[in-house]
Length: 441
Image (cartoon, rainbow, N blue to C red; front, side, top):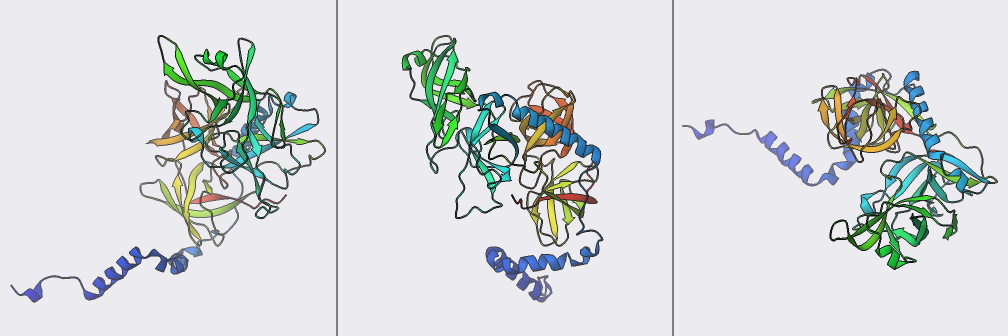
């Protein structure tokens, strides 16, 4: 056998493999040319007409249903708190755009609102949702905050490691008699996000066995913010050692918050009447852009041509019928890749809107389990009762507005946790990409 006749790799191909391995090991060498290379690669496809045009908002029937659902959410967010405030306090409804941080119970600790710091200047500092106290407006850094900086709410369970310690005077009314104490943020290892301390009557507290009693604020001042009496903080929880029968030896007392920071979509900021002024409606600063694309195998991603304008990651992608396709997960100069709503493992903020107009929508979070034909199964963080209705997006991110249509409720298991959502087939031939414009006060 002639050794010269044995097959081998061409010298040029070997050189390319060595270069490719070097670029993979040292990605910083590639970064300066990555953007121009992607732009050049997609250049032949940019002759597609309309790839940089602006699109219309979702179809009128879809937009009308979303507006009706959000109006019901707003009414629910306003209910219960107004009588607790002075007559001069004026509520301002705000949407939650983004969640940040993590505290006890693995809950987000900061909520980014769709209002600027300048818009909320002069507010009382309190933020509620219904009759529940959500938290306090965060003081912006004067050196970094500008006129368009979005306002941030620091939740009541936010740890005080990087902020002034906030102690709330509160009471649990058991058997009609108040058990007074102080509530403060818990630690990451605590079973619930809020911890109870400085009990007024430790002996009486030691006899509390099951908890579950409502905890409400007492009139107090936290920093420079006056907290009124009667706002809901949550329910009392007892942690300890189990004894005989139903007896529990209490070791610690906690509060399970009255709202779910993972799911809340709408909150209310309170302002004195003198400082109140007109503000734009929530969600009125979305730019709708037209894009073209095609599904990538196995149908859970789409390649999009987005035109010259930059597309941020997390931007919502909506089909021509108004149904949400998914979110942009990577973007380049004029192109993007979007992941479908049905991608297993992704967590979503959702609004479950009952067909019954007298029932308030349910704010929830859900993790996608997978798709079965035209139905997508998700696991809810908290159980819900069965009802018929639609599923809309909640506070998913800066560039995914609340109220986009996801589908209809198709099924709900006996536990109230596994929800089936019926969806139409995805069509990404021409889609709308939602991008939030920088808001000015």
